[in-house]
Length: 172
Image (tube, rainbow, N blue to C red; front, side, top):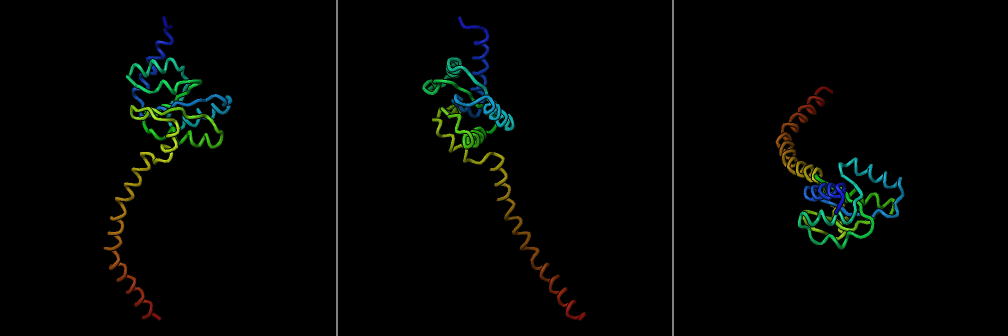
């Protein structure tokens, strides 16, 4: 009979896996306490939940939401990075952290209900965030308006400049 603590943990993990936009499963073995603390802080800054979880409990939670294909990746030590808003942010944080520390290894990614290999995180890390995409769209939409504004104002500006030049030559 499983303990109440484990049952509660499975319930929480089930809810988290079900609500998350993306979950990154990592192997944190080999990281010292200060490195894990640094990684947690980076995740905290970007509103990403990072926690160590037991593989058996993760398997049960995945089974509860009918998620297939995760069992092969849940071997050894496992920590999960859960993003509820922006699915590419954990990949960006992990990429930057791995460049400095060579760990953790990304085992798998749960993205939009689909289990992907851990190596795919590099592709997600290079994608722009939602805010970056919205900024680019606004700039693209604003660009034609700015050009139109300059085009419409150009004759008036040229006339004023011509009159100022004429005034300056007459006053000399």
